[in-house]
Image (cartoon, rainbow, N blue to C red):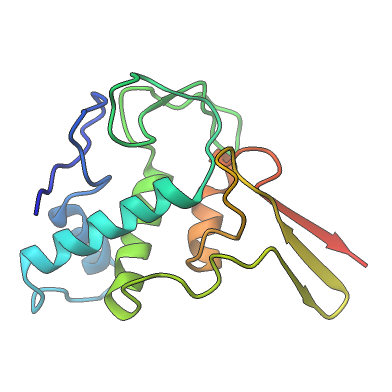
Length: 164
């Protein structure tokens, strides 16, 4: 298995948005000890999380190079405060979503819980999940926490909430 972390230079062979060290540091700061898991296991989680993000979400902006392996880095991307994000790095929001999804992979290796739901009604609120540029319909799988990290980076229409 290959494990190559995107470093912001639009690598043609990158497989992950985050390193094992970053994953360990993120969870250590939250009081979660991952030291009992092997490095290879964590690499698999990170690769799956990255692939899931790239395959399920439509992002604003353009990829930097046609040959890059992953959806980030990107040009013309802004954060929730409308500040331009560097096209020479992976945004922190994407890294955090990758960490969170990696932990979901630990308990649910396929991440298929709700990935193909096109709408959901909860009481008076209906959520319609739009198709991304590749025609993928669904909420992208993963938790609301992941969607919250990514929402400012998503294509318009990725998530629509309607009150009925």
